[in-house]
Structures are given as structure tokens and as C-alpha cells.
Length: 334
Image (cartoon, rainbow, N blue to C red; front, side):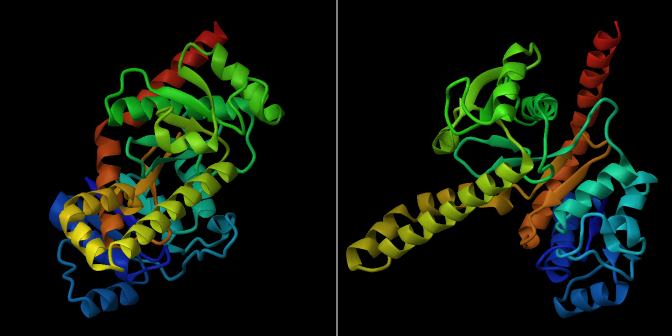
């Protein structure tokens, strides 16, 4: 399959993007298309002693920066992101991976690739770096939502987790400031009732922030603003705790001895909390695979985002979501 990558998007573009694409081509055996300033891409590859043999470079003279408005995707027709979306839409690629402006990717995927019929809003579905995989949806696409949007996120998240992790009946929780049914704003109160009444999901109630790491649910539903804060708080705390552990194990002879004894387990724990191991997050609800990699992605994260794009495509999750929403629409019409 062919993966188109925005080579100019992200904090570490283009060097880490180019390196990640080369790693993906070598390890995953997929065809890579890098979109961006061709001269800059080739100079980056030369500087890093990376061969672009077998990797297509598609020239795009413009770029959408992290500071640009999400709507800039409409105006910057020669940007790397816009051209990558065009290639995906026209079938020149099977999936799109980008580490650039989240808002622009959200708008671009909706405008140029389009949502699945019946889906009101697409959402970013991020696997949180915890001991047990927990899907956070939405983690950054939709600041303003309705109860029905959150219900649709719950349905799509359940399908995703059931396919990716072979969960028979994923538990769905609603992120809230308390476990009681009447907690939260009117949005949470109305959403609670909607999720409780649904036969399409396994709703287990409200989930407080302090319970997120303890696997109280498999799919955690919220608006994108709250979800992004929660995700980055977890990532930041994970890094902080690991740094403190490293400090304890390096400040004395006994600590260093303990570090030697526990070295393998500590490395495994670090990998478990490392967001780059998951690579990226799909925009669930879009009619073709669009994977959002972290803005600070390094080469390994880009490679893993490509791996995720391949798995997402091969498991026909988009078709599964489309079938569910088509069936629900038929029931509404009847």
C-alpha cells in the first residue's frame, strides 16, 4: 500500500520525518510518498546519509505552520498538507500521515476527504500510554461538542478498540468531575443519559481524572479541549515520574545497584509510557485513513504512525464504522 506523508509538518520536520519514512519503508515494506519542498527534503536526506531510493518525493512549495489558522488549509493550495490530502482523495495514496497543525488536518480531512455518511464530526482517537490500552476520544479535534457528537465518538471508539485489541465488548466511560449521574455541566448530564440508554455501547458511567490510569474503561469519551489537556497531563506526569526514578537510581551507590538489578524492567516501563511507541492517532469518522502523529514526533514515532496507518487500513475499520452508521440511519428512517 501507499502512504503519503506531510514531510514539512511537525516540530522536527523535515529531518525526523524523512528519517522516519526511510525506517518505515525498510521495516514495513510499504511505499512512501513524501510531500514538501523537494530541495529541502533531498538536502535533509543527504545530510543524514539516507537513501531516498524507492521513496517518491512530491514537490510542494508552501507549508502550513503550527501557528496557522485551521482554515489556512483552504487558502494554501500549494501547501504540503493540502497536496497530501488531494493525493489521498484521488486514490494516489491509501493513507495519510502527518505531524503538523492538528486543526488544519481536521478541517482538511473533512473538506477534502470527507466524513463517513451519518457521522456528524470526526474525532482524534488516541491510545493513552498506560499499562492497559485506553482510547481517549476526542483528544484534540473538537472544542465544542453536543451529546450526540459524544455518543458517536463512543460508538466509533468501541468499534476501533474491538478490532485493534480484539475486545468483545469495550467498556465506555465519560470523562467527568465525579462519578455521580448528575455531575458535570449540562453537556455531561445529557450525554450520560444518552450513553446509558444506548444499546450500541457498553457504558460503565462517569470516569474521574484520578481514575484514568487504572483501566476503569477501554474507551474514554470527552470533548477535544478537555481530552487534549488530559492527554498532555498524563504524558507530562509520565515523563516527570520516570525522571524522578532515574534521579533516585543515580544519586547513590545503593541506587545505582538497584538500577542495575531493575534495568530491564525500567526500560520496559519507559517504553510503555512512551507515546512514540503508539506513533499516532486516527481521525475516526473520516472516509479514508488519516493518522495524526504527535507534533514533536521523532523518526521512530513517524515509523510507528505509518505502522498504525497500515493496520487501520488493513482491518477495514472504516468500513465497519460506515456499516454501523448506515444501519442506524436505516432504523431512524424506518
